Image (cartoon, rainbow, N blue to C red; front, top):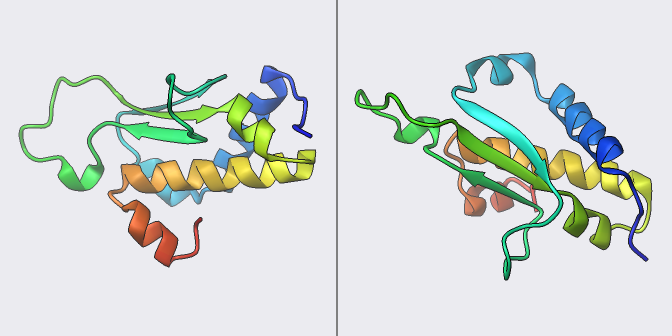
Length: 116
């Protein structure tokens, strides 16, 4: 049975997950915003999504662009979890996964590193 949780509590968990990321990494994140949405775009089954230009892809001409977006989706996360502890873990994994994309780390490499 899916976990029930308010949006405010879920947003707190995203903040808590960000607190787990080493400050040195957070300090080099550039031009990125982290958002919480209830649901992914129609037809997509996602827990999180990174949209933008990874740091490894930015060249000398990278300027004047809107911030990259990391979106964490509340309802799919709650749906796959049976307990609040599982939600905490899944949010942390999803946040790290999407931040890794900001640093240019692919899904394949994340899976190799055990971030499934």
